[in-house]
Amino acid sequence: MRPGPHSVTKVLGGATAAAGISGDSRWRQWAADLGFPRVEKVCVVLLDGLGLAQLRARSGHFPFLRKRESGELTTVAPSTTAAAVTAVGTGVLPGATGMLGYTVRHPETGTLMNMIKWDHEIVTPQVWQQMPTIAEQARSGRFTAIGPARFVGSGLNTCALRGFRDVSAEKLSQRVDAAAEILKARAADVVYLYWGEIDHAGHRHGWNSWEWGEEASATDAELQRLASILPRGTLLIVTADHGMVDVTERIDVASIPRLREGSFAIAGEPRATHVFTHEPEALAARWREYLGERAWVVLRDEAVGVIGGVSERFRPAIGDVVAFARGTAAIVDSASQSEKSIALKGMHGSLTAEEMLVPCIVEVV
View (spheres, rainbow, N blue to C red):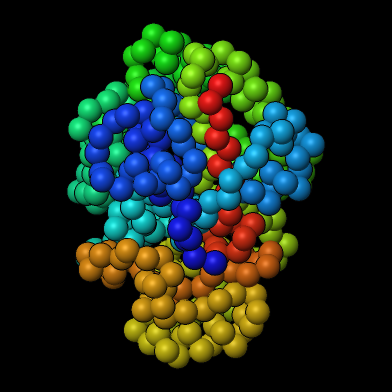
């Protein structure tokens, strides 16, 4: 599955056009594509990790959301937070921003960079991700991003949300209150509210767990409260960056000579693995033979087509061979990944519908 015509890349630009803010000439078409009406104020809620499949399968935990018609969007490839949140914030695909996975190999130094826990000594976010954000492209308007304090000035926020005024709030209830207060005070035209706890619960316990269900119910209740306290006439948009798969099999490259042979670096994540090698054809053949239907193994040229919009600058950052996991398998590397990350129950990054399809719920409250 590849990003379709109705992609998460259109959400923030479309929301900005819906609020009457000028910018990219395509934004008004994006708003029309996604059914965003003309309003004065917009609140965009991004629920990290809530795929459309999860929302539908566990709809009992979402009495507020399930009563509202959900549009279907595709996220980006790879279907992971750094790539997708930056795509939402800029309106362009990861191939143009360089946010190509959880970890990305720097094409000049060979250093593995973590796109979430940014190491500014390797390269600064502004140097790595040079595409302008929606706020930077807007010719007017006031933008506010609400999230945890640790995100203020972080590498990911810098890449995705430059030009937004940051407001810190830890609990979802506090973020809901802040969004309503900001819009009532007309301190912003577009508010972006991020919530990551559904994703965290899925990673730790799996999205089929009771722990995930409890987090889902608590989130839905706060979204219902948000809709009730936003100023009348506000456009409320609820979407997500990706879905999730509960992993049942972990294939450790470090312990399997046929997979390890010929590789000199592994980046990406367990559901979208970038392998760097001097013998791509031979390595890809071995990986295809060993993995069979458990993964779709492609060479760089084909991976470039899947990711889309890849600039020449970032082309070398894509693996010589890329493996997109199928089913519920994960390709891990105990030589470079922590035991904690390998043990995660829920994972994402690949091209399955469970990971790629996300909801887009639109309502003027």
